[in-house]
Length: 212
Image (cartoon, rainbow, N blue to C red; front, side, top):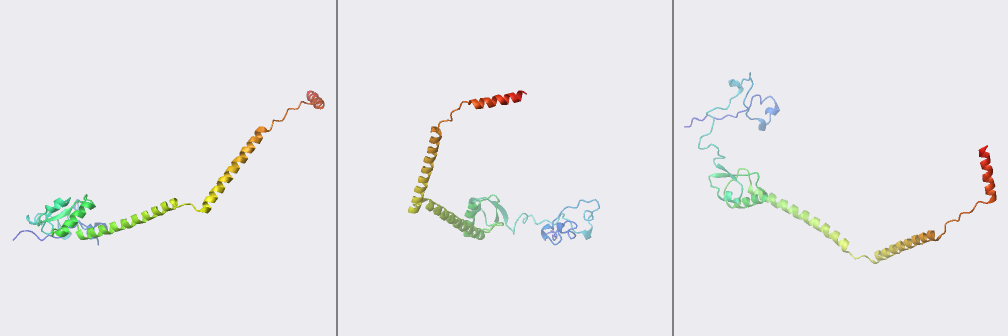
């Protein structure tokens, strides 16, 4: 007979009062050591709940085991092949999809267990993702082919005629502009006329009025 006590669920003080400490929330119902000066759990009042102490631990043979099996970290297929039947696998968080696929295929052939990995679900999800990616690639390839076909299509007779007419219009406009430039260059500048006698007399009268 072992002297191990029946292990209760250790919860922090006041877990039943506030939701952030554990009221109606099992994930928050965890143990935290009481530190207050007047805390009754720290003084070990029976009505405030039990605290972890010696005697509640598991047997030394069963310590650090998961469902009676020894945990082992796995990072590739070789680690999985070296695993024993008395061990349970835990795949590392840094293992990628390709290595996980290799491990999953070998896991289906053997009877070895994992704690944080389901081989069948992983392979089925991987196949779905790959099928979606193929569909998306096919759609993009079809769009690209259509765009290339439009650019490589031969122009029709109407389009050829329209292009020729547009070129002729541009040539006519260019010729008209050249003619206008030539006209401006050939026109002589106006000749300066000498002032007549009447003009001179009028200028003389204006000067006299200004002097007065």
